[in-house]
Length: 482
Image (cartoon, rainbow, N blue to C red; front, top):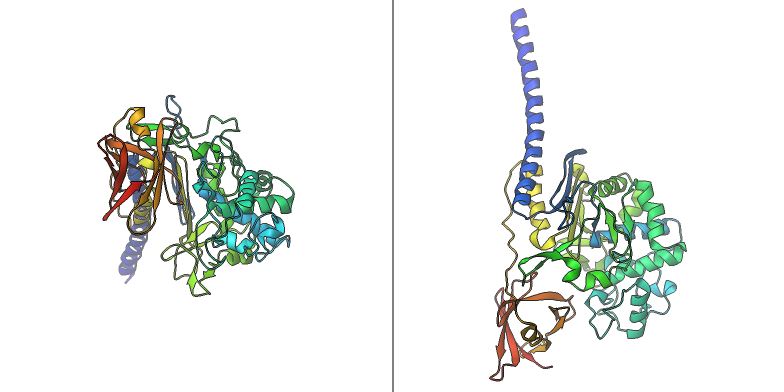
């Protein structure tokens, strides 16, 4: 019996040590798979940026890949600073929660209590937070509505809204329309209520309490950029190479002075500190946070405000459905050449932060799916290769010939306006933001962000008559009307 007990005792310890070894190996395997994934993406030039991944409270990967500024030897580091676009909205929402917690405002307060010059008496703070106000998107304005040669600010946008007097596209609270204007207005409310600039409010009440020493708010054209600033790049489909975004796209520079909807510069480390502060309810109480994160009902209470089917939206976050009742969510942002993603899975103590300064060669949502596979099942696979579209260069006279206003001759009265400026073509479809257009051939244009193409038809005199929009199962003819 004694020998049997000794053997059993020895086997028990072997089993315990084996389990421990398997657990350690599993953690190492998961970590190594993440390293392999991002090394591969970097080598394929499908990820230029920073990544931080934490699981069960342990940081599995924090690394930087690629260049911080083209034409120099400066590469990205873990302290490189990126513009995070719409992730800024989640910070703006926290500031509103704090002011509400102090009794300085209520979610049911009318927008016109703070900005009486605006023609939106039925819009409330809650409507702005949930993107259910119906207020138009200022980033979709054209030359006829805004001076595209001047740097814009919250005050100038509010002034234009007041002058235009365009009514919401639906009864406030009865529909969902994602609009950057909502969060611009929230930032201006924060300034009015706190009596300090928006950037100062965030610095005092969010950045400093979180220990975010490398985070700030500011316009790219007004600041002296640090050596750690990650310049952004976009794909020029006529030169078939990445170029600095400000030389290609128009809105990132003259709209960069806007606060609240975007405009935060930060690092992966600082974002991780912020997510930890949210998890610890360091900035607002659990009750305040959970109240704000409850999605709004629209359509007379029959539907939830959703950014996409099955994905509710609240206070700058998209909510991930979870049977556990945890606040699992993600926030994403695109501005200029930047694309950013923060995923917070509180039920698994998991955080994923992805920052890129070259969004047209990177599919962050696709990358996130493969990160999730590794974290959930230790299964390594790779996203499809991202290949930017390639085009040709055409003479300026030929490019100018495409300029004009085009209208669909059948079906909905859709319109496309094409403008030639700064030696580039820009197309604006209805009320959507403009996109760069590039020539694929002498009579075909394409946009990086769309699968469709524009096949142009010219008359015997060489003047453009119209184009056929084709792609993704669509084929519609647009006639040139101006």
